[in-house]
Length: 256
Image (cartoon, rainbow, N blue to C red; front, side, top):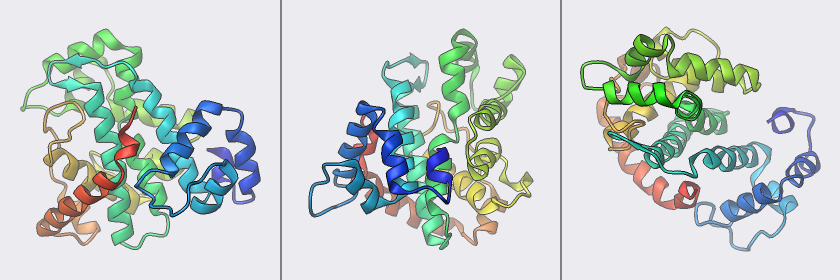
């Protein structure tokens, strides 16, 4: 993360870091050579992969590979499936990037990373306070949001936990903002409002398409996020169709 976000870093700097983890390097090469990128010639070394895709996109692939390691063991709790949460994270990342590109945002790769990590707090709850997380999931119904149930039972919600950990891990500001505000982008007033709105809307689209985070469709439409991105409800339908193509092309990213 530090090397890729440093404007003075070179491809050689990133290659040096990646080479310390053979499994991660192999996974990145597999992703780069998947149909999602449509490269005419097979990439067999990290130097060429970085040259093709750039530091930010390689960073995103590395983070995708790293986060996916948390989903090696399937878990089912009522409507919740770890595998579905992983699908949700990747789908929101892809959808947020699609929205950002449509809006001609210069930092559209940040939108993918923000979408990929927006629910990192749920992952951490599942992994580190599992018994309490089970109680939260079993308490869910259609009357309250996940965050409301978390706050009542844990004293915090996944957005607050995710933001705290993201700060400790020195994630980019846009990613931290999206983690904290993806359910309440209307209340965010910082410099990364377009990224936060993109993740908010992407989260909505993926949930409505049947790819929710915890198995239930608990996300509410944010009129302010749509207005901030100049999107109408009919635009959501178009984005949902386009997302199907993007997800099909990026199938390799869902592999765990």
